[in-house]
Image (cartoon, rainbow, N blue to C red):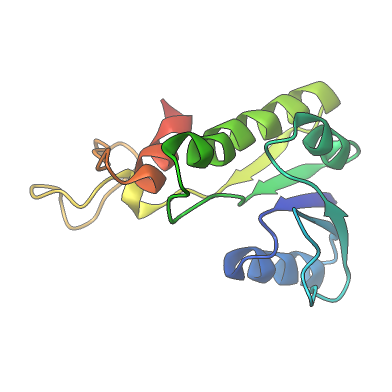
Length: 146
């Protein structure tokens, strides 16, 4: 299977790329700049998830996308963080729809549920999500599902 991994240069992305290559998938890493080291067997394409054309070009011909390109620590402005987290996700979804790529792996976070008193010790997908709105990463991880 041909798989595009956005955010492939972060620690989680590198681990996912390694696993995909080990499972004999054809993996392409997409990031703004080429890392000093790349997982063996992984192709690289330069691109920014905020650039719809670059995302569409990278997704073209792929069977699946693993979307990990997210800002955890807020950038200078909320808008800049939102452009990557939500706008980048929209660009990935739009590119998949336009190219016929039907498989998406989206990494969420426990932060989407919020650390709220009264939550049960074990959460399921049906439990209420109450992310802290002041934490952009948590709020944005919750956003794509609403």
